[in-house]
Image 1: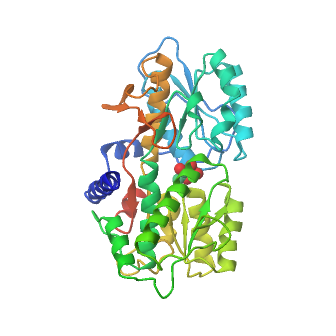
Image 2: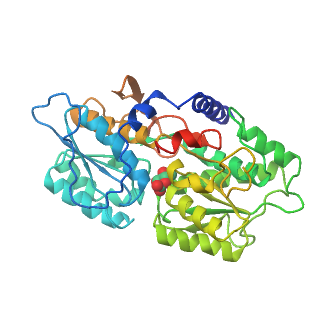
Image 3: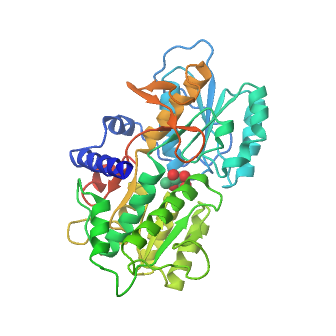
Length: 409
Ligand code: RAM
């Protein structure tokens, strides 16, 4: 309960900040450098020429590896990663495989270790796939870290996440409930309390809500954790307010959610979004991936579907499917959604990588490093037996702040 309250407060504080003109100060400074182009190359991309650097006689090379190329979320993370690494006089590289598979990531990690890089920070397609290659990394003195989507705690120095898993998972459920009840998101509001009020009023008793999920790959660590958190919260809400939320898989499995996987691939995500439309079973799709959000937004809008959408989306990609003015909030496919400052997440990951190679941060609980005047300290990871660094607050993107964020994220 305490944790949920804390998260609600974080959300409220955050939205207050966004409402007051621009999230945290880092976002505006980061935005001046925004490079949202999708670099789909798997070739080395060491672009440090324009950086403001402190002199380093023997620069180390720090690699950021996203799940695959062509994902704006990964590009934005690298924008922050590069800024942080280069501010220390070191070199940054962006290396991701073309395919969203762990095998392709592992092959690239092996190449990079043999090339002699100093650290590799991975957003993983599968948590356990890096265990074998970690031996080679260790013997070559290459530090492995993760961010966004974790590698196994036994093989990583550190893991950075934007906000707690439950903070994201539970609020995705509350957003879906509020949207189905056509309850507006308002700055500073307590979404949990609003969702519970909706259910306590038996709002869906005559037509229980059916919730779908359009996820990334079946093995994607972070999406699977968020989905598990959503499932736990749905079970709790269903026990407290029975008869409002339908079991989308009655009799066939444990989850109340109808889950489809778009593999963080634009075309596969379009196919799965269209499957939701043609099956016509769910009332709302929650997509915990920016790729799924964009694909579902397009298909639901183009198909004139009545299925609603929320999840984790980038404002620049979702603007066409979100409200433009105060009167049409629930005419829009996606009335509101969540995310965080992706650039900051990348920057803190970059600072963690540099500190781990310098030997000042070892990832143990209590160990810390600094970035941009803030100290980040590893805490126990509630979702694994390792440690984690929590970077900041989630944001709710709604009609009150989309204009402001569309040019940043
Ligand atoms: C996608 C990725 C990433 C996730 C975001 C929200 O781009 O799948 O893992 O954190 O969406």
